[in-house]
Image 1 (tube, rainbow, N blue to C red):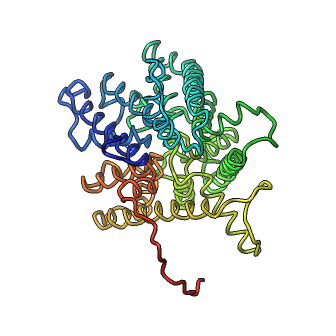
Image 2: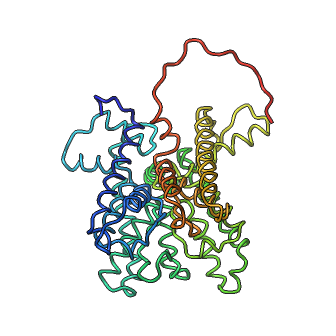
Image 3: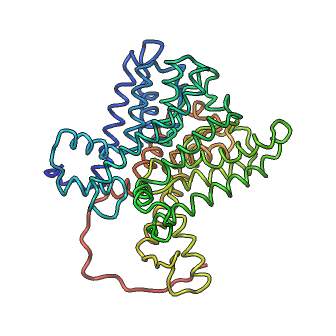
Length: 444
């Protein structure tokens, strides 16, 4: 890498590409599918990308189509994609007692969105330990439900697979043993399954930097870093606002559900789009208003340095704070008694419009290929792919191969980061000594 002079962003993008390529090859092996023929290149590539980019969109039901070997491959891809290959590589380097140099520390810092390299190895250890604790606790909790339903070994494997998938915000499940493509619908009224999965999704989606801050400062909220305060504030605001909105928009639930089930389902539908991909209700049957709200939540996603995708909660916060500050004609913008730098606004705006442009252009292309599919469903699918959410109204398998390959690109950009992907493709340019003159234009 040093000889080729790849940038840190290019190395991360290349690393995910190699993981996807390896996963594709493994899933094409005859041992990976139940029919003994192996998956086609398109099926393998789509599934490998969806799992390593922790999305959850599928062309085949995970349990019905893939063997135990194939499911293990998917689980490993999900774990690699959720934690980041550099985190896993650093763990192996520490186990082999290899020295981790400055270059590796910088790359690791970039992969988990840390602003500094000091203590990055210590943070990596904390990430691995925390991941093992949360995924293990989730698997234990879920096993109390799945073992009685499926038997000891099958129930234990289902619990482990679901726990890892939920924590990594991947959305893959093994519920096809009950009903193919049903996700967690068979457990829509199960408090243990719902609460466990929701907690895993939220914990995995708030980010490793927030973990570190919370573990060091406990409940001393005033001492939290600004990043932690923003992430927690926006996360809980989106959860409660989303749950209230779904509760009101899907009033038709009242005829079939108790108040407890309605509240449980509302919170699940508010949490899973950011960006887990599970569902306990029929996504395709949602009202248009609920679909639009879900698209917005999928587009926002989780937080920086987490297992989730999307434009991230901090991007949304920066844009909103700047907008309100500009309207109120404040000379600077910030929150919680801290002023934000202009560079954060520039990056937030770039991330927002890059993702929005990719989503809309892809929706236009796919809509041009499929006149028979409602535009709302196509926008939903593209939002799910770019946000690595994995939710679908059921059109994924109906799309033409060209449209499915386009979704593969969206999932890849969504996990690597659309801005990072664009940066990885560009070459560094020297700053010009002479800049063009400034001229004012009319805005608004």
